[in-house]
Length: 330
Image 1: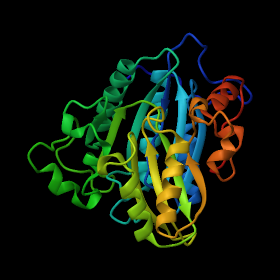
Image 2: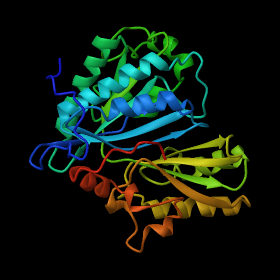
Image 3: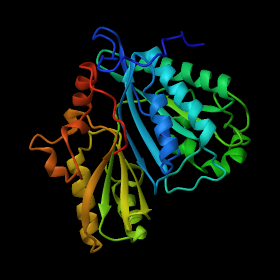
């Protein structure tokens, strides 16, 4: 069991982050719900309801049918907030009825822990495994450890765990080599399974096309992602955003030092031009480290609605100063 932190909400106007010497961790749970406003608000309340953990940002997308919560705090308090989020998701999300563009295996699909400041990756690996065991024990959800927390090399890439999605999960878990790292040997009936891990900062950077031609988006994604010979440290999918009538090249920049956001955008622009397709703009999901922004200015990235609040460093500073958690999604 994790040590029991205080779960009382922080007093209004008071800083809920620990003082600087306390090891600081970021968590970015992704939940398979992006449409029901009442459920999203309950999820956000759970994520931001633990003293010592702070909800920095959250967003929801109805086409993906997915929400992303960015949280930071001391390890044990952050773990308590993540567990509260799991409990709400399991109560309200039934993957047997869930439909969305984004691949998923669980109601809480993935929870990465990211070291901040002086926190080590080993600390985050330990935290991921402790939280994974707690999720399995409390909620009966099978858990796969991924990235730096993986104990099987085949499970290091998140996409390997997600392959087959929720619909293929039962068969996959009965295949050789795919028993979960902890928890039941079969999926939770409605909540599936979860991937819990530790990783370096990742930037979800999406490029929107001015067409609804998803084949074009998929072709561009195949050209720029690392696994198909494209940009190092870049994963990409082509999807259709039905509620907006456009196609999107959805990327995860897993190493912005190897491939900058500018490099990713330039590659998409180049491939789109070859197909006679235009780019309408870009978007961030979650926050971006200040170091990853171009020295010449964020406007070079054409990010829709960009403000300094989208920068991780800014949100951490404001949280430490007592800025209230966001009361709605972007």
